[in-house]
Image 1 (cartoon, rainbow, N blue to C red):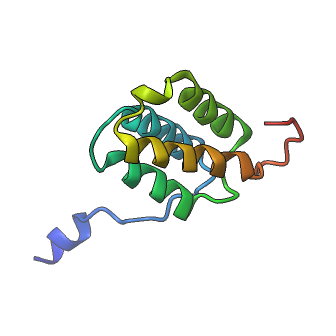
Image 2 (cartoon, rainbow, N blue to C red):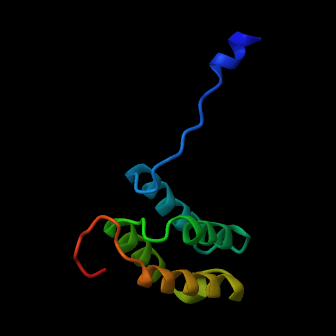
Length: 104
């Protein structure tokens, strides 16, 4: 039994500024846009609750561009459209964590 416990993977905290995590978050946003399910709220709420001030210039730019590329009427139901509008406004208010000075 002790040997099984040694084989358990150790759970470590992921650095929120990690590029791989930020790429996964961009994928989650892309997946959720246009879904008429709980997914838009789940993804956007998680990002807003856990990533404030921690998104890179690239991540902010890509998420904004991806949202802007989808016409409002294709962003899901009315409640989903409001979710994306709220998230897009939140992205506009975010400061870049990596010190880049470009305007996002």
